[in-house]
Length: 402
Image (cartoon, rainbow, N blue to C red; front, side, top):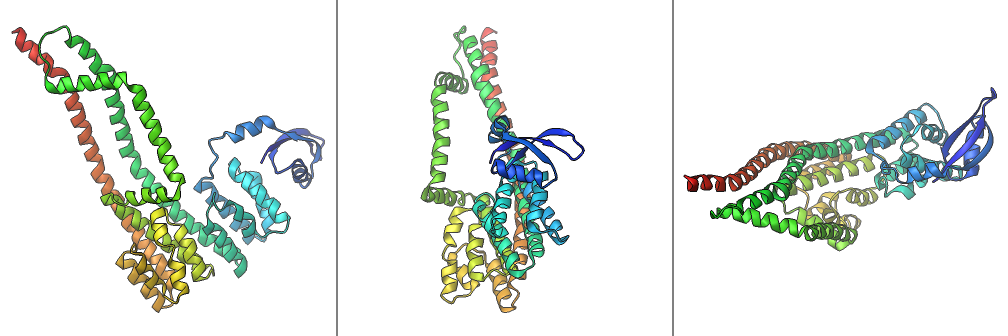
């Protein structure tokens, strides 16, 4: 969606220019005329378009999307029509990607589509869960309440993602620093010492000789290392684009001892929280289960839950269908079974999600507490090996000289 450069005049006679994101020049003109402004000219703003096309803020952040929905709920509760609410919010949005989406949503609503239908083309950018929540709110006639429930859901998911990211920041920094230190020693320090040791006839220790040979080999064949790294990145993205190889990669990730528990429990928590949200919004169990399965972050686990709607359609209960997948822990199955018998499935699903969210947080804290000292120890061993390989020949030469 392009930017347009408009020359405008206000009621007081003041002439000014402004750039606006719109689907067409006519829509841009109608936008300013609806504000009581006189439009002199509208032309394509190519410079602004080029900047926005390569903007790093291409993705809609969770924070911006949650803020948009909070404003939408407030305006709809205040009695504003949905179309007018979208217009008001779109004028204040700074994220170009979200502004573009809202512009297309606004245009779709003007052409007679509902809010859920207008957001349907952007399910890959947001989620099918959001579209389903909008549809549930429209069908029940209580859109603000349904959106408020979705906002709480989105905040929990965003919080969980933020906790995982923050837990990985420190170990990642330590690993990056270790790799940088190793690169400096191999490329600059050891080759200089190798030239220095050539002037002496004293034999080098095995450790020093091996590290120097490795440093020389790494420097001479650096294009090979670069090509291997680039090939690994290309192979990774290629495998990710193909469904079968992507599922195999996701299954391989679950073989990591501590990571398996965290990934499975996070998937179970997200599945239960999504299913509870949709059921409370009035979506049928059959449709809700299919959408909740797609919300799981691991494609292998998603493939294991594809048969859930079919099992329910054949007359099985939700808990019986979940047992067949083989991925849900016994506690989750028992709590779902209790929710079915007590006619409080939505509430019990939220309880299951809360239980596993707390468990995930505890496991992440344990993981961080274990990985930090382990990486520090490995860095210490790396530095110690490097120092020994550099100074051991010097000690030997001093002994020979004496």
